[in-house]
Length: 516
Image (cartoon, rainbow, N blue to C red):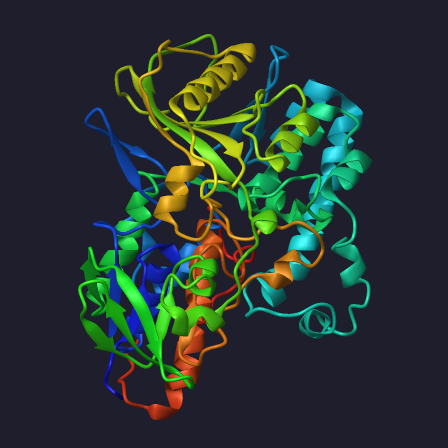
């Protein structure tokens, strides 16, 4: 089996990254994907003949992607057209005006000062400084490194001499509490608390450590011509160019092993592919729950329903608008943030939700109606709760009411397609519709995520539900870590021939590279 390919299950961002990097090193790779196109959660759906992005829309940490393309022997600019946004996002509340945050930090300081006063501007400066400090402490040792335990192994990576670093990342304090130290205005607490939803978590239950997400976004947001699916297509093209083989409509039924290590995969068609290394780009719960056969159950643990991240109600719509000047990324906040998350914790979609609106055609010369993706946070109960048409209609009405309260009018009835937690649960088995794996609730959550290696030798994990976490750049980093684990474990066999790559597998910090 020395010449068998590494099999990657799933062509999500993590799997595509793994494929591109392994094949760049001369390793034979085959990607098996049950759907008809690459991308995983990064996908488009057809709404009345128009493709609309149905997955992630916010693209940050561009240097991570640049470094991955370079390590795979390619250049990002040869495959993608990227434009850096001047405005990070537009935020609105009940007819009290709106607040923009900008790529230019001083413009954000000034905007916050005009919106909420000089004390708020000063609080934002202090918050930004602390968020950057936490990111700088954790970037290399945790976000880019393999999974590590708490506290001594992490302390070893950070540097034993930096004794104060563990205290500085504030793991035992809730983010909501710490936001109150920086901002007296509840609207700003909402705004900066919302960043925890980027990893599917509640600001009331996450550690203050996660304020680092605000720093990541402040370093730059990019718009991709063609949407996020263009990134998936580009990674696939690079992997293909390096020799990776792709098979779509190929559902894996079983990961086989002989109790010592992986020995092959069996497809739903009955075909068996011998292999000694498999990278599973699916939620690790799919392994632990037996979705890939009983022999693979022991590879990973199942995330309990109470520990799942958020799911979502996602509207894909085309509509004319009135009353509110939209930017590309827009957030319309609920009137009661506490009640919103209490409803989600109780297994209900909030009746007064915060709504994120991505105006996909913003900045183009296209004619109305425009395309939108609208997201409301929801519980990950898609495996136990079927959303009725009446319930979906009520959620749509509540969402439109929230937008209307903030000044935005969409067409009524709204031409749209609605994706619910039940739909996500079917698409991503064993998750209940959780879109980010395990929620980042409590100080230990980040250390409980599945790492690249599993309990079965030769079986690895990649994707947004594994370390280092959710989001497109993190999923890409998980693919890089998986590729390094595969190479490390197989390097001694020396059966494959390396290809020369520009930059190898090493990656500098995203915050030390040029971000322009």
